[in-house]
Image 1: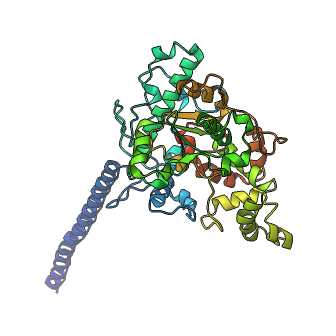
Image 2: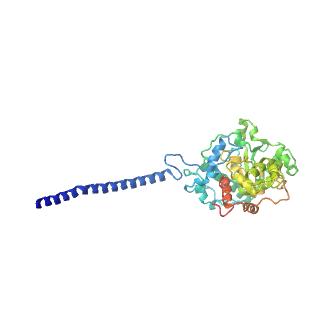
Image 3: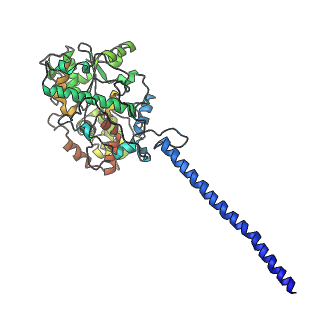
Length: 448
């Protein structure tokens, strides 16, 4: 009996010994699995870092809203194009700092009154990291990598010493500022628009006016002094003795100026390669408010009928019969709602379209990029460079609604106080590429 008890004890001990290795194996397998998972996560993070921010594994890099917008427009979506700007919140991956231009000449200060940023003060904002797509660093060379044309007759082929014979030190400084703007444009295009097609079509030049006598190509940006510049072109062409005598309707509806898209392809290419190409821009939100005031706050049957009716119909609750019939009385908030709507009831218009979409500065190498905020000095500087008659200067009068004050930044801020902070941010996003390319500072401190 004692022997049987002893055997049972020994057998139980042997059973425990047989079960203990199973527990150890389970622990070892669990530890090994955790180690493999840890190593896999480390490798995955290294792959993400190598591929760069904003890039999904096994996919192509994400693009900015503006890049997608440009590509869609290249496919022919013009008048009824709907911009997918509501997707901005999805582009949240950070990107490396921007490579801002490093000019060979000394850094230039901004033109007085232009509200453009000093080149030295440029910094990377949250908006740069959030909105724009990533791309490799730019290698700064003398080669033009961002434009299809390098004009042999460029104003900027004139040396500074040649300018000294007929302009003051302030004009020499302005000359350098204008060249700095062109260089900034080249670098921004190289970084953010490098994927666009380089083929220039009639669509790309439809807003360029031609003056053959002085070999000028002027891209109109409405609400940035284009009426007075068209008057000046008519005087240069010998169609009027002076700009002051030309009426507004004659300028815009008289068909006295030739447009570049009216020529055959050979004529278009010849002028793009040899003429001086000019554009003037304006602070984007100020230009947008100016367009709203001109087209919706004053009598205008065309804009009230074409734009006012559908805007009121879609965005005004309990609109009156009179408002729906006439389209008059569109509020600024309703106009902003229309502008931001990806399903607009009516297409875009040249008066509030982005300047970079009108003039295509990443396809056409503009010799002169002027600012509305310094219009008089820069325009007269251009006229002297082109050899215009010495008594010809750009007119400064306001022929439409002359009793109203010109739209200023103070007036712009007053109008934007009528909309929400989110709407204000989205309007800024809508024009963001203009702010970037033409180096305008943020109009409101609470924008990001």
